[in-house]
Image 1 (cartoon, rainbow, N blue to C red):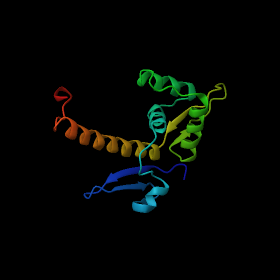
Image 2: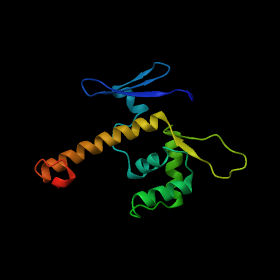
Image 3: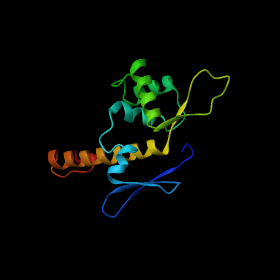
Image 4: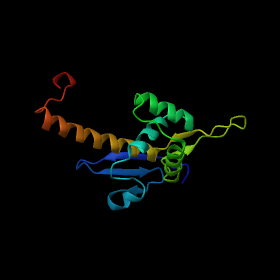
Length: 144
């Protein structure tokens, strides 16, 4: 289903439902095959963020190093292994190839965007718990 688009919806109970353009609904335990419910690795999360616009391996390295202010620097083996895994999961896909270009660009898919959304929600929840616990309920940065 290469041309399938996925839509992320949250129910009133807080469950996440993924619906595709072929009207298949992925939810609950079945959702685990397509959508990972647990935390993403920092590597996977950063690569997915770098792929919101077409990007190649070296561009991803630069994006991550810049955004993390040098805290995270990928070696080629780590980066290309992770890119291959994300492509196998259909969270990123190759962009149409320009015959003149040597670099292979990738872009995030709808499934990849759903993963990022889930991870952002998970991180926000953890952040709010930490603020509530450590700072006694302060939610504004100025209160920290």
